[in-house]
Image 1 (spheres, rainbow, N blue to C red):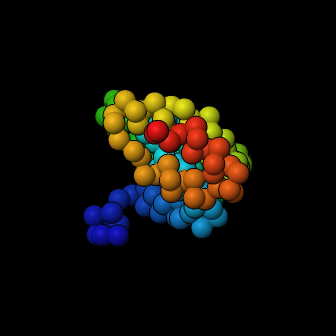
Image 2 (image 1 turned 90 degrees about the vertical axis):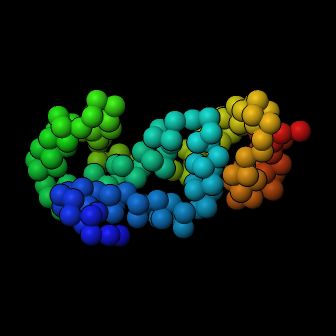
Length: 156
């Protein structure tokens, strides 16, 4: 953390810290969340992963607890109006987040991995590369699931 980060508006600082701490929590909850997210990032929008949605919801919840809903909404509205056009989606989504939403990040990440396994295989074949995150994610699965996932997602 540096002085430039700490000079941001307090809501931004709290929101960012809470978001990143939630990712650390994900890793300690289950490394599959971390490695699974990294693997599916090759074929799935990173901002739509269960871990990212959960971190954003958690961060907003913490900001609301600290600053109040009205101030957080006002702050996000100002950000929405002043940000570049290509960042508007983030603030629109932030404003729409329901802070009471509970996401089973582990269950949803596992499902996302298996749902995208064939896409991962296709992308690796298309690029002629092997994504190391597939092996890392597989290592976090029980043996039977590991074999199944690797058969679906690995390059021959």
